[in-house]
Each structure stands twice: as structure tokens, then as C-alpha cells.
Length: 432
Ligand code: FES
Ligand code: FE
Image (cartoon, rainbow, N blue to C red):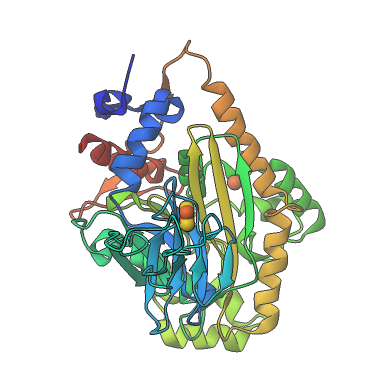
């Protein structure tokens, strides 16, 4: 039995040798594990907090979380982005509660202290009134600033650990995932569209990390969707660039590329198999695709337009034409936020088409998201008992190719991406 988080031995929760890769049930269910994850993972690594296009102008802000820690991401008057701990220095009230907004400054709703966009304390309300503060009252500087803030291609990350490696090193090859995703815009930029879609599920946060790069589940978890698509032939977007309409076409949904386990827990499903570049170059958006081919060159082009999804550990997913982030609330409660985005300067009908395609799969009216969160809840339910201890993550273990730079390349539906998560998890959790 584990007691406090400090007594936890994470190595005992992963069983790994030549032929085995197993994860202990408790890694998903135990409160002590969850507490340790907040301290040893979320407080130590770069965490995704937002995209530039959400806060384009001075005064714009958005709220986010670093693990269970609420933060505010602001754009100050000089254009600089700050990530502030969303907690009043007086008695701790959350300062900003809206998902997004525009302000001149922040007034705490509890006793009215006022803070600037960079967190500086501007005013202590009723400071000199009777019963107020002594003249030598030690005025706090302001909201706590998250010490490290950096961005890559508009994606804003923050890190609570001043000694962490720089963002560039942390992202490593995962930058390629981002480059290819955003490279579908002729100018290499995306713009978040409207407000995000937020939902919660009754399961551990790591199910979402694993599932975004799980090529194995698609035809099974989403078989109802697959059958519908096969019947009505609406195979668009990521789920088949070909004109479908048959079971055979839908079988092409099977991944043909490769799976990647990258350093620092990032992972990627890379596939140039579904989108046939020649077909795209003679299809309805020909000029747009030609421009992309010229920008990226013929070798890179199939990867840019091919179906691809990736996770940036611990809380960012890039899939379809969306940014997805999730936050752990409890061992068995997770909140997922989905931002749909437009590819800047791509044809309007093209962007609109992707939106429609995502509506069919995600969101309240979609098939896919409902399938997935039902599975996450089932997983958590299945793990509630203690009769069986271990889970198997061994698919592809024999065929994975370990590269010299520390990355691993696997067959399309290898569980290498899931093992990437657990490798990073184990390493981080071992550090006190
Ligand atoms: Fe914010 Fe008192 S808690 S002003
Ligand atoms: Fe799914």
C-alpha cells in the first residue's frame, strides 16, 4: 500500500523487459499517484496554455491550467505574453473565471484588489480607511508569475520550473508534427475559430494522452461511425480523402504510415497513405495544394497533407484540424477542451469543409468523441477492482525500431506512442 506521494516508487508501476511492457492499474487510479503527477510532471515540464490567436491584442486574456493550478494568460500593453497564477495574493480567490476576455486590469471579486496585465498589484482597496493597513504594510508585488513562458509557432507553453530545459529542446522532433500540421496553411499560420468546446469525462487524464495517438482503436471503438460512413459515403477530412461509399473504402482508414515514440513523452502517428497526393493535386482545391507542394517540396508534401496526429506531453494534442488540451481534475475526472482552427489563407470552403467534418466526429452532435469518452469511463470502471493488477502495452514491441537519437519508429498500429508517454512518466516520476 502506498501512503503519501513522497513514498511512491513509480518504477514499481511499470513492468518492462524484452518481451513485456505493462502498466499497473494504480497508475490510473491512485490519489497518491495523481498528487505526485501534479508535483513531478505538471510542475516540472512545459505545459500548453493557449494559442496566440486567442489573445491577439493588448488587454486580451484567457484562463488555463497547469495541472490543477489555475493560470491566466495575458497580453500586456507592450504585446508581451504573461502567464500569471490565477489566485489573488490576498486570500487566494481566483481572479479571472471566464474562458477569455479583454480587460484594462483585473479586479479581485472578493475584496477588490486590482492587478495589471503583467500581474503587478496596482491597488489595495480601502487601504487607508479606518481599520485599514498600517503605513508600513508590506505590500505584495502582485500575482505570482509563472517563471518560464515561450511559444512555438503561436502555441504558448509555460513551465513552473525555472531550471527546466528550454522549450525548443523539450519539443525536439515534435516540432515537426507542429510544422506539418500548421504547414497546411500557405502562410504557415493557424487561427483559432470561435470559442472552444469543453467537456469532462469520468476517467484518468492519461487515457486521453494515449488515445490521440492510438491507431489501433479506430475501427473498433468507432465501428458505428465507420459503418455509417461506409453506407453514406461521406468520407471527408482526416477520415479518408478518397471518395468513399464502400466498406472497402472505409478499410483504407487503416493507418499505413508509422507510429513514433519521441523523447520527452511526445508521440506521433504519421501517415501519408490515406491522402493520395496526386488525387489532391487534381481535385477541387488544386491551386491550394499546388501552392503547398511548391512551399514544402515534393518529398515533404505528402507528409504535410497526409493524415497525422500527435501528442505533446503532457497536455496537448494535434489531431484533425484542432488543438486539443486536457486537464487532470482527479484520478478519475478529466476535462477536455477542443479548439477548432482555420488554416490562414487556405480556401474558405476548405476550412469550412474541415469544420463540418469535425462536427460529424467531435462535439455534442458527433459520433467519435462520444465513443471515446465512453471507453475512457469504461476503462476507469474496469480498473476499479483489485482482482487484476496489470495492463498490457506490448503491441509492436518486437518490431519497433530504436533510432540513435532516442526516438522509436513503429509500425502503424504499434503501441510505441503509448509507451512514449509511460517512458517519460516513469522518468519524471522518479525525480523527487
Ligand atoms: Fe482577492 Fe481579497 S482575496 S482581494
Ligand atoms: Fe477515438
